[in-house]
Image 1 (cartoon, rainbow, N blue to C red):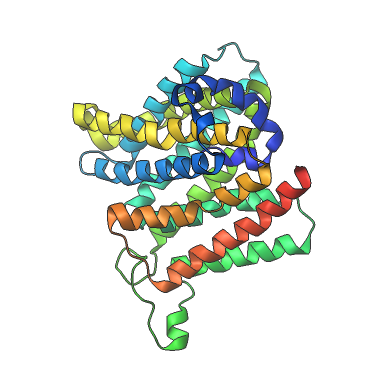
Image 2: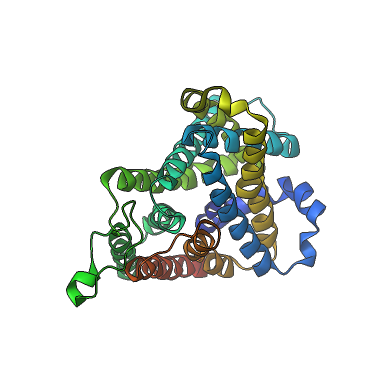
Length: 326
């Protein structure tokens, strides 16, 4: 799951982040690639990484998958950003809280992927940062976007079955049993992802302000890896250190953390925040397409309508805010 939503919610935190990813960006020569394409590549990379992560479930647990992703991601980002380790108590506390939020978000995400399609997990999770983006708004219009997003989540969870009303059935897909309804555990996991992502956004902005985006992310990811490592060892044992498992874990870290962060930060350097917000709002739809293409996950039309509702709510809320902040 990409971490650049922080920059959409708080564009002022983007400036320090740009310098730290310069080395990674220069290696790929991103200035030769149009910014919208960089954004799309970053989002596709994130979701492809998530799809590959499901293959790790054959040998390791969601805790093990999270530990590998955060561990390898932290090693790469620490090597690139080389953050100072002397932090004040308040800054250290923020970094620790940021890392805990990151660990919880990713652990819930990979647990959810065992039970629900990729597109549904990402879309419900997307409501977390969406709510953060409108939390301080006093506009009635933004309340409408929240209601629309809630309608989308209800459709995705199977809590609102429009097929029953029309007599056409729900169309299947979406839930663990193929009925389109998510069970309580799946709903809880998706809710925890949204909560963790919201915390990630708020804490990430605070950490970025104090340390710079890439340095704060590297340290937070390292804390998150340490936090989740006991879950990884308990759920996976020695399988966590199998060479093939570790290779896949490195691939997931690069695809889901390092490459998207580099690509999206390079894109943000050369595009208005409003355009960035519009493109970022497409991530749930991209997740659904990747799930269909790589994992053969089909969704019924109520679930597709639910994704459309959340995407529309995100477009409305984020473009409205970015239009006011520049």
